Length: 172
Image (tube, rainbow, N blue to C red; front, side, top):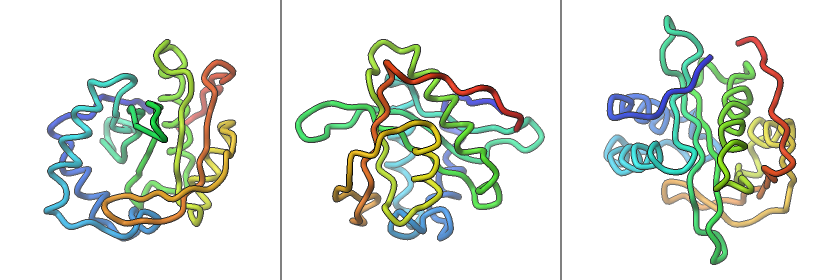
């Protein structure tokens, strides 16, 4: 498996994920194709920002199947680094998201600008919360959050990059 920086040609992937009811089940529901241009533009900007925004490619025959990234976020008056990930439905539940997240965390570990990473999965998303737990994030509690104009409760997870230990490589 490899990660590649998100690029203009990845708009189709963003639309495929963001407009899919399965992918968006814990993010307030699918978006419309009209909502995609600003999301796509942000992902391109995040590709050049700090750690970056990446496309997940399990192998060259399969091609891109999801995204993972770390970007800056203003949170309670402080700038922090947030992490997020998405996979097309056919690739969920196989450990790919946790492997891709571990890969991007390894990149963040090497970046001296990133002292901690925060994740905000919906409290009703057991898979994403399990990934945070598996990779050593600390649960700080619940908070109001949202995505795409939808509001919901999230768990606030934090991973201290000073104590994070890169994950052993796993087969994809």
